[in-house]
Image (cartoon, rainbow, N blue to C red; front, side, top):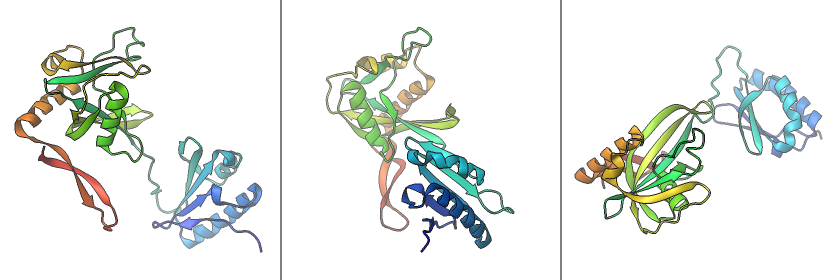
Length: 261
C-alpha cells in the first residue's frame, strides 16, 4: 500500500499540512502534494497551509515552485500558504498585525510613582534616558494584568497587584510594519524596596507623581496617563476586567469595560 499525504481540512474548507506529521521521503512528499493540489482544486478547496520546521527547510524551494508563498515565521518553523480558487481573490488572512506592550503605573501611599530609566535608551544619541514606566511586551497567552505584574517585578524588583487599565495607546508603523498597543495598568504596590534589573535598568526610584508630570522630557502619552490616573482616583472608575463565557460556553474570555475600581 502506497503511503499517503497526511493533512486535515479546516472549517473554511482549507487544507492544513504539518510537515512534522509526514512519513514520506522528500521527493515523494513533493510529488504527492503536487497531485493533491490538482485534486483539491477540482474539489473546490481554498487555502493551503504548510508548516515546515527547520529540519524541513530543504523542501522550501520545492514548495515555492508549487506556488506557495511565505506567510510567517517563528523560531524553529516557517508557514507557507497557497490560494487555490482562480476566480476568487485570496481570503487567506495576514499574520499578526500588532505588538502588545504593557506598563505598570505603580503608585504608593505617598502618591509616588515607580519610574525607571533604561540602561540603553540614550546610547544612540548620547543623551540621558528619560524617566518612564516599567513595562514590556506581553508574552503569548499572557493576560494584560499578568504582564504588568511580571514586568514591574523583573525591572524594579517591586511586587505589585493589578487593579485596572488606565488607558492605552495605539501606534502604527511601530516595528517590522506592525502596529503597537500599549496599555498603562494601575498597580497597587505590595512591596516598596527597589532591586532594579542590572541588565536593563540604569536607575529606578519612587518619584512624586506631580514632579513626574512636570518633567520636560517625558512623553505626552505618559502625561496623559497621569491625567487619566487622577480622573480614576476622583471618580473610582476605570477600565476593568470581567470574565465572560465564550460562545460555545466551554471557556471564558477576558472582556474589558468601564467599571468601578
